[in-house]
Length: 208
Ligand code: CO
Image 1: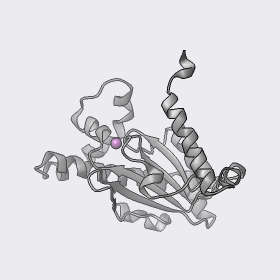
Image 2: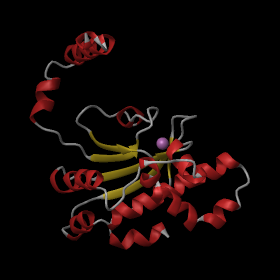
Image 3: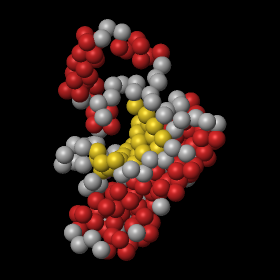
């Protein structure tokens, strides 16, 4: 019985694979042998924020890590394994930390309404909120206030990535590695570059 489930998705998969091959005969053969992505994307799991699609990159061009509220917690083995592989093995040149306005994870953390595993996971967002409480309190409109917290959260995650020992080692060895902070707008489809790019230890001060 279960075999017939999700047939519509399997049909879509067959159509997609066929389309790729009809456009480029060697497409899968080429990708099978290696991946050489120049970018690592660290973003939110939100179904509306599609990494490859937003920046129009093909399979093989973007290494991706996603979790709720696009966090880069130094103690998270999943994120750090992705980071190390991207930096040490793939030698990506850019790491994009991409939040999005209207993030449900950020909102849940801000409103303190969560419970269970997600509550623990979102702890870093609450810390960011507390660090910037005065600035946030000055913003009257509730959704503007949450959007600002989405931005501050991204800056905080950029700081985490830039502080990581794998990243520090790469810079020390002369590897080119830029860490960017972006926030994607669900209403326009455009990304907002927060201009907090860190390209070496000397740039760290930019993060405030
Ligand atoms: Co989100």
